[in-house]
Image 1 (cartoon, rainbow, N blue to C red):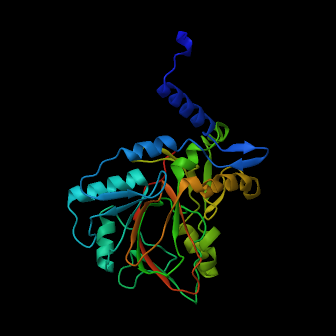
Image 2 (image 1 turned 180 degrees about the vertical axis):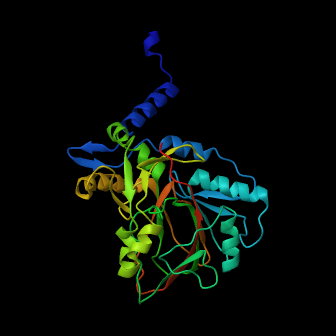
Image 3 (image 1 turned 30 degrees about the vertical axis):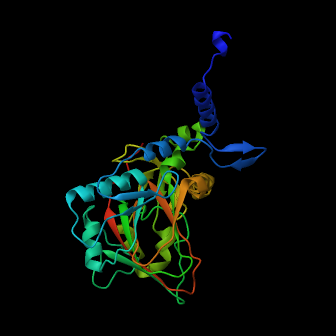
Length: 326
């Protein structure tokens, strides 16, 4: 046997993995039919599989995002070591979940405040006692309307860094929340799109979703409070250092330097990346479950498939910084 033909099983497997990864770096197109990614999630999956934990149990949920944490009582004051590991799990998995956490409003606020200063939402009704908690109360009188992929409050100059959502009452079926990995959404773009996005800035506007809630005599005041912020289409995460796609249909009005009509195909293409199933995880709520998500690294979608059943949630959001360009 010649030297050139002496290849080991390990060599062949390594070469096959490299070939598959090269094939899967972007969406494949078969005769005009686009299919999902095949390989570029591999490295992140492999990295997450090597992580070790000392203070919490961690059960991964999705391919590259989402983990259920156990062995923690959020109603108690957490030690610095335990909290640091919770925070590390959030950075690594982008969204984390806890079951059976019967928090009262004060405990919810106390836990959320460990992550930073809490913001007040100007459009969503608050918990009557704690204005830091936005209350989402759905029943036969009002159905869910958060069933679109979005980052929260990108219409702020400083959008939320993260959110802590507590399930107070949930329907027997339905009402799940889905999350999409926006690191993966960026990584999966073609090289041509990545180059196109290098200096792209998107203009965001609360009016696209919450405008109908503002009386005409208050519109000038609200516009002064919340002018149209400009954020990069691709942000650089302050803690992980990774680029993430930062575009959603809910709040992006246009590409800077373009009209709304010229911008729509770009907004649509970028927003569609969150819809790729391989980038997602799905969480089925149970009473007193808690989710904490990184509002930069993920988008979320609240499935509205439970009307007229009751679903009551409360959310505390942590003030973030202006998104930095990648």
